[in-house]
Image (cartoon, rainbow, N blue to C red; front, side, top):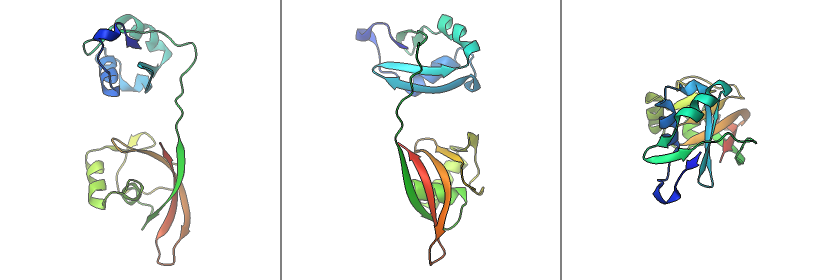
Length: 165
């Protein structure tokens, strides 16, 4: 997707593109990721929704858009950084707090607003992790929980995460 006339185009955000698509009646479950590169946006969606989107999406905000099907899939490079974090337990709220350098209370606010997802589903702070889960916190980022590495002499846990940059 790209603006038809660059001179009159606004800079569009992820929220703008998602909102315009959903305003057509397409449910979020029908969509995949939305990426931006070189003043273009790339939207992954179910094949059965392709024709409907091509026919009906002509404008996002006040910007007329041109939509084409890509010949090759665009996959952005996502840097992954393996890190160690320290936590008292494998409770999700403690791990989110440690991973994003938040106080436990601030982390609880994200859970209360339902902004924390474990494997794509809204998560509770009291849930525990085993290893292999993907955690996403809206507005902060996402990571893959790899599991317990070791315990310290003082009883704290050294945990490994794979942070997506």
